[in-house]
Length: 205
Length: 221
Image (cartoon, rainbow over all chains, first blue to last red):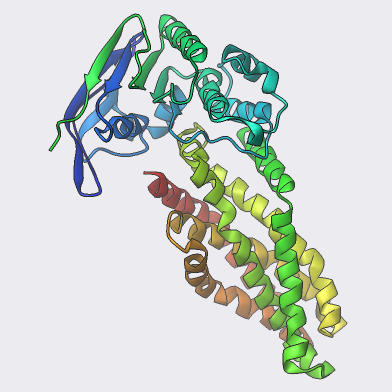
């Protein structure tokens, strides 16, 4: 059973303290929902958890080992879905998804299955430049499925998604948790996940 | 499939589907060199004297044109964050990017160069040695350029800043490359110059991927 946790996390962005003494703890099969007003530091928290940024103070650990000590190991177990969709317009939908799946290594869902799971299987040969905002978002989300990663870090995953896809996403996250994965999700919407902890950010001076 | 092959296939696909970029570089190279006979006059001996230098400087500037795009697309659409977070070493990503940049910029420049040798009346004796200097020197442009491209990500007017940062660093390459042609003409042989260029290439190959990868990590933080 893996434990992903952080404590006393301070983070400063552009001379403004975004997070102060934030803490969280997460075990295999658990999910954490990040809540807070715009600018409260939800995205920053996810970037810290991914290791893209380092906290000014405090530690984030996986099974007691600081993630900064072994970034390669940490990268191999996480899938980060950020605000930017990272979809190349010149490549087809399937080429986009396949590339990230192959780069993450074996262990995840096949690209075609991931597309079907998010309801865009019929678009796989289309050049990605023709996708709508919601469809690009879904392509972005397939990365979590194809990666085979233990830890999903999803930054406002429901942005631009329709109700049916949001439900599909919820059940995909549920399945991931049931198989022993972890998820951290920043969202304003109610996803209706079975058991999640909530970390409310904001109020930092 | 190995990570190298996966990355290389993606980069080449992207480059091939945006091949106008690479064509522009070649067009700039040719036009820049063609301007010189108009500027300095068409006297054949004069052109032969300045030809190698002009062609090398034009190649430097042409390579700079495409340099700022090396990481820009990935930076803007968020792919760069994901490449940093992928289990593949970032240094390998940088090497693949540099290799693709060279294949789509440096190699076409080398292929075009003989046409410009004819136009500038460059003596045929030094054609092979000049092509060798281009073959050894253009990868150095791509490698050092990758450092500049990574450092200037997110800067305003990044392309101009990139040229200001990188072009001074390329002066040694220019000196030994053009000097190789002269050395052959004066009968000294170009071996020393070519070996120095080869040394610069190996040095850049060993050092720049780490520097560039570090700059990329800073850029997405």
